[in-house]
Each structure stands twice: as C-alpha cells, then as structure tokens.
Image (tube, rainbow, N blue to C red; front, top):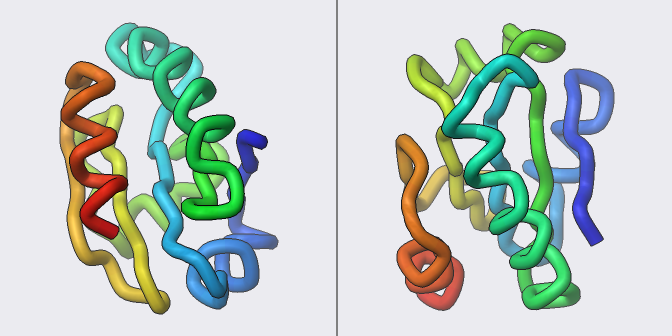
Length: 104
C-alpha cells in the first residue's frame, strides 16, 4: 500500500514507524518524478509489511523538504528508527532502489 506523507502525519508515520520507511519527495509538475512514480507504487506492494513506502509532495510540505535538505526531486530518503540512513537523488531504475530497500 502506498502511503501519503505530509506535515500532519510525518512524525508519526515516518519518524516513529516501527519498520523502515522510504519517502519519495516529489511534485506534480516534475517529469522525472512521474517516471519514478510507477516504480514506487509497485515497490510499495512488494515490500508491504517490511518497508513502509510513501510519497511526500514538496510543494505541500515545504518545511519537511527543507529540513531534509531536499534540493532536487525526485529524492528518495530511506529512514530507519527515525534517522536517514540512505538517499537517492534523481530517477533511477527499479533494481537500484530495490538494492537500497534490501539493505534496510
């Protein structure tokens, strides 16, 4: 299941999650984000129960994007126990994202 993170639920859904989380920082107007979206959607089903996977719209949650120094999108942050443990910037193929997820 693909989660949708925002200012209101980020603390509880991401930082306090009892399983690792991958956050896709995106915007509706971003071309490369649209290329990554179907991959993120598929991975959310594949990793259900193992990794919480969701999206965060940088235009709607500016403060969170700034807090994590997201300068380019798409940016994927991998968060474990409330801490960023890895990240990917830019559109990359599914196997590269899976490699990071498996390392969590």
